Length: 384
Image (cartoon, rainbow, N blue to C red; front, top):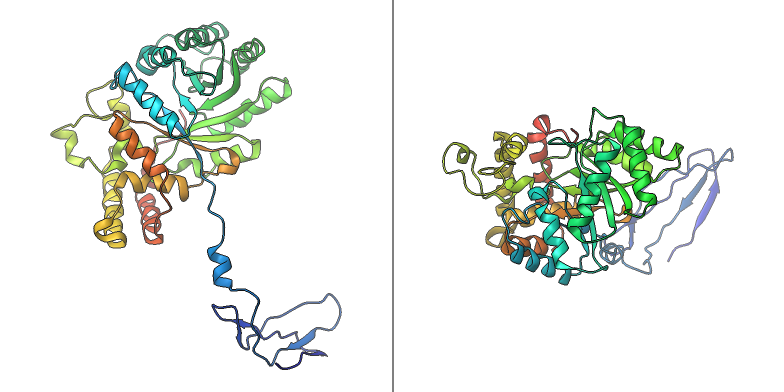
C-alpha cells in the first residue's frame, strides 16, 4: 500500500477516489475540496485499498419503508352487502391486524352505521363517522349536533374516535360549525375532528380559527387520491404536513376503474354492476373517473405489467394498491392511511392481500407516472 501525501498548493484539492461495487479504491478520480480561506490541500492516494464493508451490501440492508395504515371503508354496508356479510368482512379485517373503520351518516341512509352498531365490535376498534350538509341538512349548530347524535345512536356508542365534516357547507359560517364541534367535543362525543373534501385554503382557515379560539384542532383529512388522481399532491398534502394533520386516502382504486375490469364502451352497452351503474352514486363516479384518458392510462399500465412480470404479472388491483402503499406520497410517519372499500368478501381479501405485498418494479412505477400525465389535465378536483 502506498503512502498518503498532503501538499499545500495554490491548486484545488484533488482526492483520487473511485469505488468499485465491492467497495474498493480502484483508480483515481478527482474531487474539489474547499477549506475556508486557507490554501487548498492536495491529497494523493497512489494505492489500492479495501474498505471494511461492501457498499452494495449496505444498500441492500436498508430497512423497508414503513407502510401507511389500512382503514376499512363501509360505504357499501347495507347497500350492496348484507348485514351478515358486512359482519364477516369486519371480522376478517380485524383478524388481519387492522383496527380502524370508516362510515358516515349518509352511507345507505344510516344503515352502514346501524350494521356496525349491531356488531358490538368493542373498544379495540376505532370508528369514524361524518356529518354532511345535504338533503335538508346543514352545518348549522343544531344540525351538526343532531347528525352526530343520530350517528352515535346508530353505532350504539357514546363517542366516536373521529368525527368528520364530510364536505363544506358554503351557506353556513364556518365559525358556527366549528363552535358546535367544540361543544360536542367538550361533551365527549368524539375524540378527534376531521375534514373531508375541503380546499387547502379552507383547511388553513379552519385550523387557525380553531387554534385562535382554543377549540379542538382538525387532525385528519380524508381525500380522494390514487395513482391516476393525484391533485392533492400539489398543494393539499404540503398544507397538511405544515399543520401536522394525517391524510386518509379514499378511492384508491378510482371507484373500481383501476381494477381493469371495465372497458370504456361499457357505459353505452353492458353497464356491469359496480359504483358506476345502477345506483344513486353512479353519475358522481362516472363524472369523476369514466373518461377515455383513464382507460388509456390503464392500458399503458397493463402493458408495463406484462413487459415487467410476464406471465406472473400482478393484477391491476394489486398494482394500483401497491402503488398507494409503496410509491405514493403517503407517509406512515405522518400517520397516513389508505381506505379500502369492497362489495364482496372476495374483493376484501384481494385488497388486503395487495396491501401486504411488496413494492413494484421500477418500470411499472414509471408507467404509473406516465399514466398520471395522461389523466392530469382532466383530474377531478379533490375539493367541493
